[in-house]
Image (cartoon, rainbow, N blue to C red; front, side, top):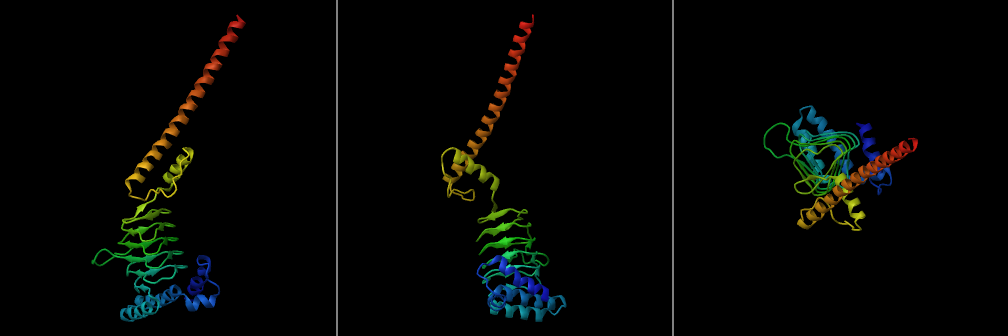
Length: 244
C-alpha cells in the first residue's frame, strides 16, 4: 500500500510540471487522494464488504469530484490530472502508467451483469472529456483525444479522435504533408480527422499526387536502367566491330 502511495506521488513530478513538493502533492492533488481512497475501498470490496467499500468510495467522490467504483482494478503509477468529473465503472481495468484527465468516463453501454467497462492497457493517455464506453480494449500506449467518444477497440500505439472516435492514419498524414510541401502548398490546419467535404477533396488530391510521385520515380528508375543497358549494348557492338 505504502509502496503504491510513494509511486502515485512520485509519478506526478514526471507528468505535471506544476508539481513542486511531495507535501504539496499529498495535500492538494485530488487525483492522488482519489487513488488512495480507492485502494482502501477496493480492498474492502475484495473482502466482500461491499457496503463499506461503496460508502468509502462515495466519500472519496464527495471530497475529490472523482468517482471510482470500488470494484474497478487500477494498476501502478496511474495519474489522474485535475480529475473533476472522472467516472470509472465497476468492471473497468486500468493498466500501469496510464494518465486520465478531467471529465473522462470509463463507462458501460449495457445493463447486463459481467464485464461491461473498458480495459486500458499500460501507458494509455485519455484526454479531457473523453468517453470510453463498453467492454472494449485500448491498446498499450494508445492516445484518446479530448472529448472523443470511443466505442470500439483501439490498437496499440494508435491515436483516436472524434465522435465517434476514429483512428488517425498518421503515416498517411505525413505523406500528405510531404506532397503538399513538394507542390508549394501548405496543408496547415487540414487534418484527416475532419468531415468537411473540401478537406476530404484536398486530402484526396494530396493522396493522388503522392501516388503519382511514386509512379514517376519508378518510371525514371526503369528508364535509367534501360538507358544504361542500351549504352552498354552500343559499346559492346562498337568494340566487336573494331575487333573484326
